[in-house]
Image 1 (tube, rainbow, N blue to C red):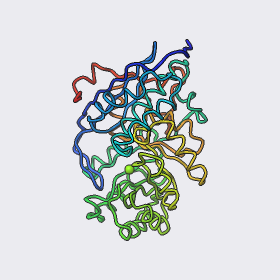
Image 2: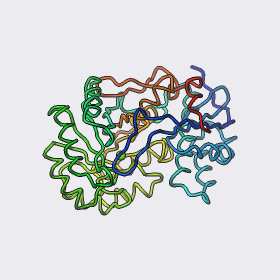
Image 3: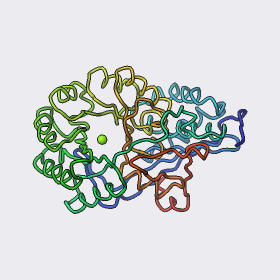
Image 4: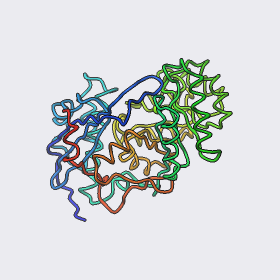
Length: 369
Ligand SMILES: [Mg+2]
């Protein structure tokens, strides 16, 4: 492998792709029928780094017209410096939300470019401490009928996944009976050994979540994600005090203060982080350190083929979400997408960087920006 240490960040390019879902999907508080992937490429001397985020196509001009100017010319090995330039430069735009998604895509591409320049795997650049990252199957949308739910759960079992998650909180918590029927169906389908998780996406009130928590515990549910909105850390903490499953949140963490608020309120048993929203790998590792200081583990949210590198470098990691929409898109559009083995993903350490290449020919038909 060739080592290059004297190159600057050059062109920063972005493109958005909207991919229809297999069927209409919904969770407790949102419905959708497509997913938009924003891919960022960063050229640095002889290499090109790749990062991405799942967000709105408006991230494309945000990256190309604003963030590119802030990072261009930086030493390609000085990723924290380039990131700090973005952080300072977007002050008047506001960090949380789409700006942080765009920054995350750029930061992931910069880290990938650095690893490729050094000729080392991205997980090693970040400080790999785990060769394999346990994953859980995630989907179980509220729009699924019984047969579809059963088929998806059985597919995960065939893949050897020992943990699975379904959505509850349907129609903002107005169909609790159906939620619990679907949980019962899931438990019956997977048997007693596989871990069963649920995600309400903030669809319940505190009282509803506590009452549902009793029924969930009867089905040996051990993970209750966003029982109430993660904008209500005190509410999450109240639920956490009264239910047996672990209470978790963090996927909407776009900057450090969000994670500080969740941890400070005692809101979670396990802290979720999304590398495509939080600001990239550097910020991910800072979040992991905050959690480690509280004795809390990290669970990676979505984007499995990017998250796996951060998870492998997170000493206090629990597991990574193998989200149906994203693992499908990443398999459709990227060479180098990982296959689960033994209930885990293992970063490919035989290749420099993140090991991913966008298949432009397959992606072109989905391009929207
Ligand atoms: Mg969630």
